[in-house]
Length: 153
Image 1 (spheres, rainbow, N blue to C red):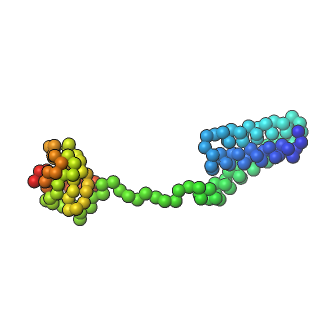
Image 2 (cartoon, rainbow, N blue to C red):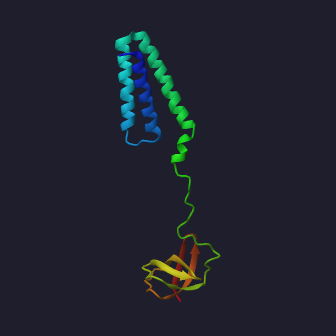
Image 3 (cartoon, rainbow, N blue to C red):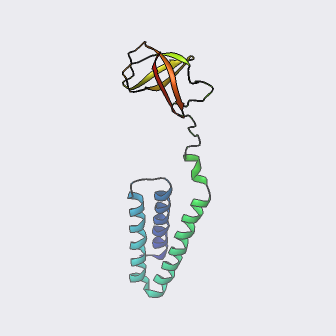
């Protein structure tokens, strides 16, 4: 095989490896890239001898490391990633919303937990071990981060 053809196959293999690392899941492109590189190097050793094969092997190794390192450092692939974050919280109960002694009502049955409405805010609450029916009037016993304990009022 011609040396230019082997170099082209190695470059295609390196491109497939970089694409596998950055964008394409499933190992298919990575395996194809490694196979192309290995076949090209094997043909180089067989057709062009040990000296050319060693030069091509060292060049391929350096070029592959540089391509992977450069593509990871370039941050060009970040445009494909998500830039938004989720900063919401589940059942975030601040002490200014609910105080011990506040009154409310059950929106759903508490068996022993369910949904309540206290001071116009809907939240999850836990009864003090008893089952409370929907619509029951309740009073707040305890307020913990992420948890409200209630009982019948």
